Image 1: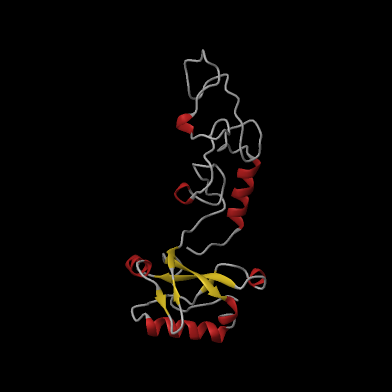
Image 2 (image 1 turned 60 degrees about the horizontal axis):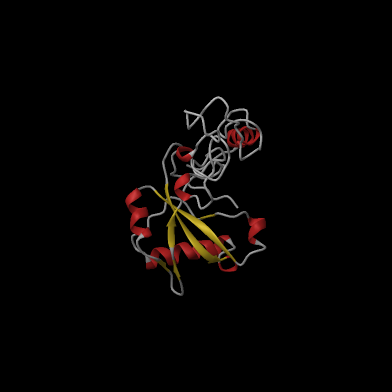
Length: 191
């Protein structure tokens, strides 16, 4: 289901939070969603949303789950900060909020070197940009003990941790990188 709003400007920047653990059956119709908005606004008087709620998961995925998460969007960053400091309330429930991060399919993490997230939200092991081993780039050392250049030297064999080919992980020759770029150029994103 796509929600529309008349007063949104095309290039307007939104500031978003996520509400987790909403019971899908409680809010799975347009009327129930409208009631949630009314309840949230009556129990959280300063709540000023610029659009209706947006589910983070697709409707076909929701049919398999009991709970899901929603995005709330605001015009002013201060409103997001206010709602992150405390829970949102309704008559029967409280909901914890977290900040929503926009990620693109070609965002590459500088820690694990994979795509679709950034280093500040990464919980994976470190991977080297040069050799794909489990260390950060600044800890990379040439395996040849007589080598004077400990970082990027002539006899170093590069290996990509995403596609396993012989190139650095951020190379435009990487098939994984090319796929991420093409997906990103085809997608239409909310910003």
